[in-house]
Length: 348
Image (tube, rainbow, N blue to C red; front, top):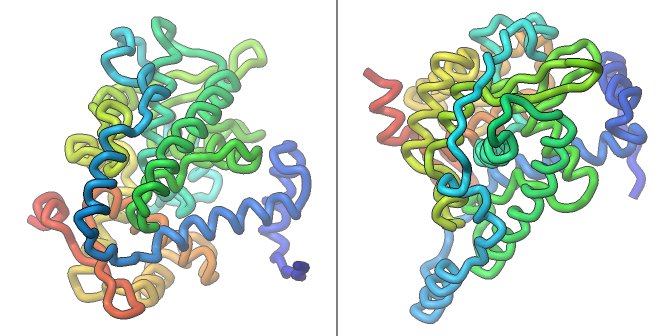
């Protein structure tokens, strides 16, 4: 099917940078990847209430959970990773892509298409295992390994989710790649890290200050920060217990929130802002979009529906995964609520 799309000149210029770098072969490929990303975000927003299982279905669910093939995860269990403490310093704000937009650090959210924290956790665990006794390794080696291993692990999780009829909002595989090249690139450059031509860092792992990248002898090298190592070293339900029903433990969520508060100030302020909007009764998608446009549109220099909707969807997805907000379906509408954990942490 063929569509004609109008693109503003500023966006066209930004896209051309990625075409020049060879990350995408054509404008068509870039737009196709953007559509896939947006559909993934929208799917995460569509909450379906799971019907009660029959006794037979419950038995099937229990057996599937116990017999999930976790062999591929074995080498990424904490118990199989050698002791490691050779960390590097985190990137400064001025070295991150945020700074190129002239965003104040306290108002720079993570890009909305970063919709799952588990993908970053997996990348960190893979980096943790690859480093062994080294402080750094080549960036390309890490990215290729991380994308390949994440695709294999994602396949196992997707098999489990399919066999157990997981609804969209229950799936933890959403951000993990398939073996498709576009999907692998999306994972590497959106959830992991890369260095742009202007030497600024992009990608969730860097923006969250869990890794840093440097250029030495014409090669890019990557290392893990102290916070990245600490986050990697907390047991994870999927990686350490073979539990494909929960992407993050409460301990991981608590550490992540504490880390973000100290080191990624804009993201923490965004979470705090959103929770208080919900508490005031502004708890539906369209209402929140309006509030985001009023409060942040002028700062971002873009009040388009696509940008506002993407930013809201990504933030709510991350917060839902952390257990900070709840989603309730009323008819065809989704309303957000503040969780008990969020009340303890953000309302004092």
